[in-house]
Image (cartoon, rainbow, N blue to C red):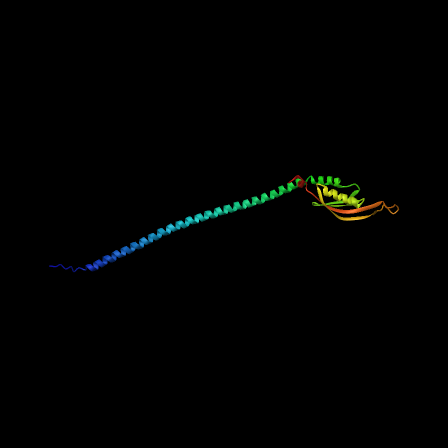
Length: 193
């Protein structure tokens, strides 16, 4: 005889499936939450690590910026010191030039020429004086052109006239008043620098 089972097995099977589904759903949700938590912890750790690296880089950049500023300050100081050294060196080299200039003034001055005024502005020289004749002024210009320390003579003014001693005395002779420009040549130019 066949056995017929009249128990509500399908209902029990459905309840069992629903129960397994609920347990599996809760497990999946818990597993998903756990995975999300682990991923969040991992990502937060990476973010914190990157923030620490960024902060360290910012500190190093600030330190390097300070060093760059110090280097710029040192370069500026170096340039100032080099400029001072160059000025001192120029002064040292130019020291004997006044002696050479006065020595050359005596050497180039021909007989019969007298200076009444001598002016120096940098390397430019201006001679004013009286000569017995304009040929003596020409001789002065030739002597200046041939000098190793003076050069580029340019005659600005020559006025010829008679020099008077006084109202009661007769004229002495012809005199030429002159203004002559020249340039002082550097002694270091002659030294081969």
